[in-house]
Length: 360
Image 1: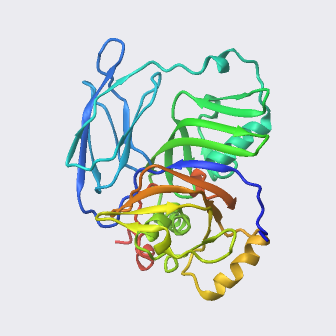
Image 2: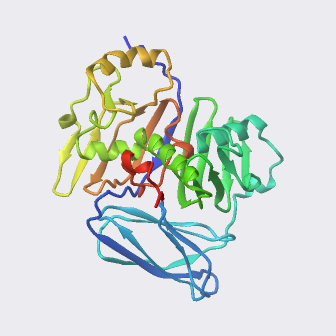
Image 3: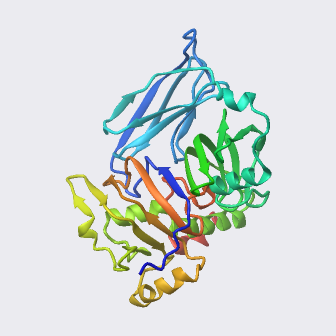
């Protein structure tokens, strides 16, 4: 008998870049940003690698160039106020890539412009909890331009959200300024399913003092310990228990044998999930006692992060990157929102070095 609750929302999350602590290669990306209507250069366009701190602005001639560590797949995002954002996935690793972009004028869906206010305050609150993982606040996840997001709730109780420019967010807990490009957001109230896609770009905030820097690093380590970035790296190394993750069959309650879901290729592994698998994210190595207690913890709805990996097939590369869409059904505690997300090029500082940050 399945004792798990069936209620939850479904998220389609895209992570196209997760860099390894060991940089094994680099890929250069360069090009020119122009206006699609008249071909003139577009200076000041933001070009970044999704989910990372790697980004640059186009110069006066519209040119740009940046370098991406690693040999896996990644997503190039081009954004500028007044234009439609452009997303380009690079799946074939090579030393250099030429990527020119002609930006088109931004046009929000006509239905949003013409419609009267159909949504409610609770719809707005729901949207921010999904995107951020928590309610906005000036000490936590502060949204600097919430008025730029448009909402529409139709007669079928489907909520949609749109934004013509990056959503500006400051994570005061981990010390990042996040520019989030919302590609799509839809929540169906009738079947309680949420699907959204977005691309964040991270910039480190300037620290005021060493104490603040140390506090940010400790919080980043807490977030990283139970993050999907960490899980994917542990999965590639086939060390999920050692690194704090427990994966089991949701129906039979039996632990997953990695050899049954992973095929090892030359420079990657293929993860093939045929039936839903449950994931518990502990922040420490998994022991037998923790496994024995995990089911009662689940039923009691504790704060331990839990999720379900839905049937899917993705390729994970040697540097920790993976392609395609990661299909997740969240169960408990936010693993999806930006408050629980770090740039994937983040590398944890060894614990014994945290206290010595910038002492000398």
